Length: 191
Image (cartoon, rainbow, N blue to C red):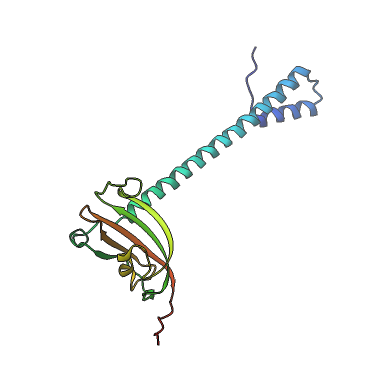
């Protein structure tokens, strides 16, 4: 006759009942009961551990999907004005916090670039693949000269897209969010 596995609670309860009634237990029965109880505890812990791993996997998957989706959601289609004009500035998200960014102001910006249809440098510019950068600049001294004009008048929290032509092969678009800025000192008149 084979002994079927018992659950932990019943096994421990039965052991306690038998001992309290003075029933003499054989060593192999006690060993079987204890092994069975240990097996049950292991199975219970294993089940919880598996469910925790599965939950963690789903949470991580949800996080990565939300991050991947957020790039798609933040991309705003180019409008006719941006496509037709050589140089374009378009406000994508307005703000009214601390406005008036101007020449010589020190600005903290978050910038990403893309260039639809341009495949000359796929590791840098390729269709709608975004590249992110945090920069601290002085307006008027940025190495991409047309950006200086596109930044003027921005407000903290505002998002603008500045389109700049690259010769005759297309345009590079810069999406810029102004994070913060400090007013620069006005130029001194020379004597």
